[in-house]
Length: 169
Length: 161
Image (cartoon, rainbow over all chains, first blue to last red; front, side, top):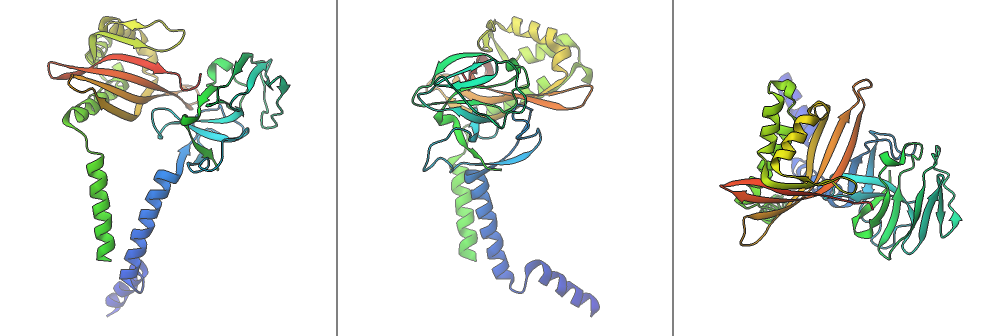
């Protein structure tokens, strides 16, 4: 008698008072989770130090794929940039917008000749990048960690079609 | 409830049908998986440097070309690839290669396939144990000869220019 009531308690704990309703909830929740984490919010794990101190290596983040559905990427946005697909991404900050002239002189970024204020950069080496002019489809992206050697840091112009979404967390 | 389960099953079926692969596509994917495993097998695991290089070389066509991007001269020929693998062995033993986002497009009426993939090289710092990842996109041309798919050309793609 005692085991029967404990079994009943266990079933109620797992399946709820109405197992049919619980099953529907589970199916709906699983489907929603699949859709959201496959096509809307992509979970990513940052690897490497190029975005420090904003993102530490190993931190878990989410990329919102719908962020640029109704607006264009803006300067300062941290974005996920796809390579061959969505499973391995570059995570970089946008500093140059389409049509702009951008250069880096002794670590200072210049946009159309004016210095860019970058409070998120804590360490800065004397990087030099000759002036580039971005086309109508190009953004200039770079990591926040400018304390590393430029040759160890992936940065540069990227086509808008490669921007998968905005890193929101 | 039954309708919901049926809808999920139908959806899964449609998804599986839409993403099905041809036998050649499966063979190419399997070949790339084997190559990855081969690269990640260290000579410490019981095989000699020359044999390891030869095994990796067997994944390449005789006149294969590897273009690693700006500033690096193209590597031409299977023998050159094998020579480089043998020379780089001490360094390659310290990293792990992963291949992700593999897209295969068969070239109609030919034994050729265009493959796009992301190769990630995870290096472990021996003293600190920390891992660093270097990922890059590659366009790979594969050809089928004597029933075996081999790499004819690898070209690194500059995602950021």
